[in-house]
Length: 193
Image (cartoon, rainbow, N blue to C red):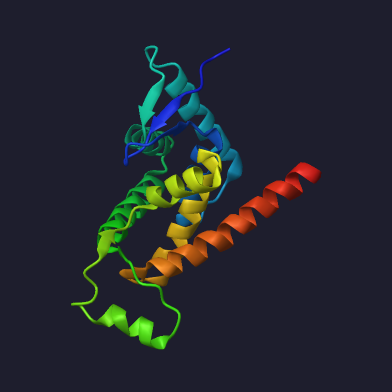
């Protein structure tokens, strides 16, 4: 039996390698060029997984290494455009992360929202970091790391789709609660099915 490969994320967190996540990444890249194909995504994910597990007895890989291997696999079968779209997506994601800040404001009414426009009041800010959401879910609510990271990713996607650069902490809390409830409900339904 082979040892589970560990992935070292950009933020330093470590999680188990997910073949399904690689397959989803490949299929999303193919979607971007209008050529979604789950079969090709599955085959390429198999190649990536095989390569990662058969490298000189290494049991860890960085997310950047996996990203490079996925791009190389796409290019190897003449999907250079999909590899380019994947690079662009990750570049845009880095830009959004660097430009988004969390502000410690609890917005309950319109006057609270006006605090976001007052640059002197908005001194208590920190850079966006979805890992903080995952860590809080693990520590405070005893969720497994993989579920917590999935919820944090869902919240991040919603925040970035809103296109706002100053995010009130109260908004994050509401999104986390909503997405956590949805994920836990889905998990419960899967267990009873």
